[in-house]
Image (cartoon, rainbow, N blue to C red; front, top):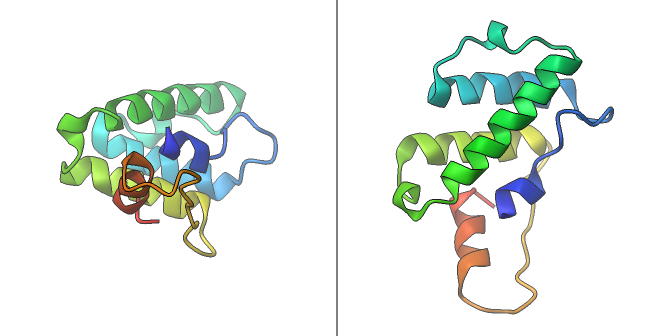
Length: 108
């Protein structure tokens, strides 16, 4: 859930083009398609959105918690979405559970 909150929607008119480019490159590592298969147009943005949602769903599976490829892509997506500085994630429940763990896993 945290990853989904930290990423912009590729279909949003204000989504940075650099994020879309980097997201396409990173997702190619997991799904093996060439970046040219996701054109930089409205249809390509919708397909990119679907791939991001698919990746977020797979990343949420604890079997992938320490998988180097998933960590690389997840952290890379966060860096692409927030190039200036790493986002600070605060746990409103002040716990030691999933929110801080996920934030650390994403490099926050």
